Figure 1 (cartoon, rainbow, N blue to C red):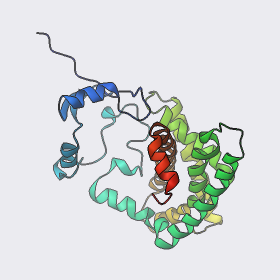
Figure 2 (cartoon, helix red, strand yellow; figure 1 turned 60 degrees about the horizontal axis):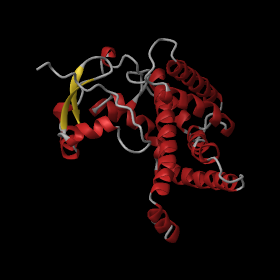
Figure 3 (cartoon, rainbow, N blue to C red; figure 1 turned 180 degrees about the vertical axis):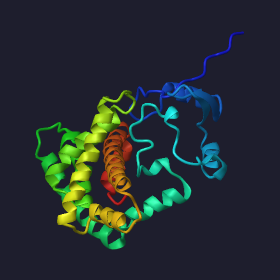
Length: 268
């Protein structure tokens, strides 16, 4: 009997919420599978909850450092200086410490007030649109960008620009080549942040970019790490929040009984 080809990642979804049919079929046959990654390398894919929890909590499975470029040929982010998810252990902790001042209790309380004000304004704008209104255009896409503007200490007017770059980075992340849309957007995003950090030299404030400059001046980070940290937080914070709002709304439409529960008790 000829040897069966290995399943190949990524496995694309056909539904916005549910895993791909190929992944569901694999998971039904067991929690651990031999697969082929986009780089062509073979490895193990863990789909069971208990098994994944065991792997993630076992230090033996933690990478010793950055993934080799050969394993991530299409990624413009993995391996970038300051990209948190590429690091484990002490190096990850060091990078987290650099951004910690931006998330102090005082800063978080202030940011919560700003988020409420931004969200309130966007909800009013959304409600004023002809129905059905575009959730992405009027709420889910601008909200995280405007919040990140406040966190970093840049103009609200910039949010559409860097949110668009973030979207380009993630939408085209599997394209390869030195001139791919994802790589060009990532380079533009780094250049934008580098320029804004230069501005903070002359006009510091109570914000993330000023904190990152202080870390550089104190010898706790190099400039490229500081820029990468800001860019990584922007991309991760923007894309995850957009998806959370939109997938949450889609789930509500698919499960109207849960929506009615929420309408009846907003404290949920």
